Image 1 (cartoon, rainbow, N blue to C red):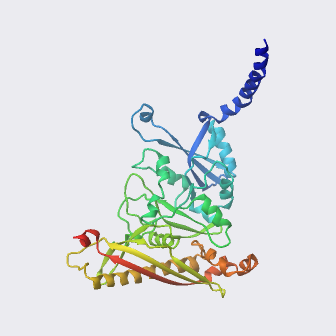
Image 2: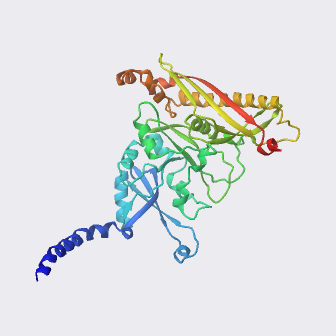
Image 3: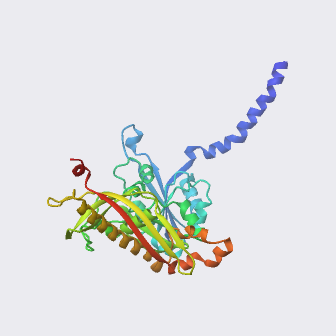
Length: 407
């Protein structure tokens, strides 16, 4: 009897725990949650916003144990705010929306022109959403962009979104823009925000806006010549001033941004052949150490000096070219330096004079020039950036192609 009396309090505690947590477990178990892979945000004629939620469910073939791709589900709702949209979708789905697996937030260009600070604050305040979720600005509606996103090499949409920005490290065509960096940059007094630029290629035909065939990387998001099942593409950068989009950058300008930001390992460009004015050489370049950046704020016209070391190899070969001759290689290096210095300068002056937006965050480099925060505030970097002047120095070391050099 004494043994029963001793174990009775323990039994009561176990029962109380089961009663207390059974309801919360029932509401939070996986069967009662709707995991969102992506969110699309558009303007709406019926209300302030049209919000599209992309969910993923296994195809019947996957459920039966055979290989198959996940079939995305898209549901949209018109609402006065993002939180209300989530609440309405909770009711429609009969499950509680969970954003812990959300990989991409897509804003249409139309809503980005109006300003997206309310939505960014709301998303950043959600404890479920990871700061690594990418921010993408679509030239078309966000819903249409998500509808046309059809990965070809991945079995799940989640896997595709997970590797979406991996190519930025070796092509430089898009940045790795996340909601965490966007939120920080939107609040920053020394830099501005940016995002991935996306669009849907509907034509899949020969583009009428033909660019130089030897400079494919000059294309912008509306000039892609790629055709395939996945017609949703990403090329370039959406530039912001405060919380509004003010312009866009093409693939080459995106390379310039990432190189200055030290966020790219290597990239392919085509530079003029010093021995043949009608020809361009494909050169694969990689950064060699971090860029050296100095900012002079002695006047209201900041003077920004950038020096960068690059190393590369020639990828294109022609029969009569002497790429093993040291003088020829020196000429190619000089041609590469000249071309890149011009490209980087054009990019920088575009952000300064046209967009008035310091997306590279040069203002952070200038902080050491001031004694205290009052001096920083009085200088007003974000306003004075439009007065900036740039001095770009590129030092490249070009080698012949790997196989040609070693034979």
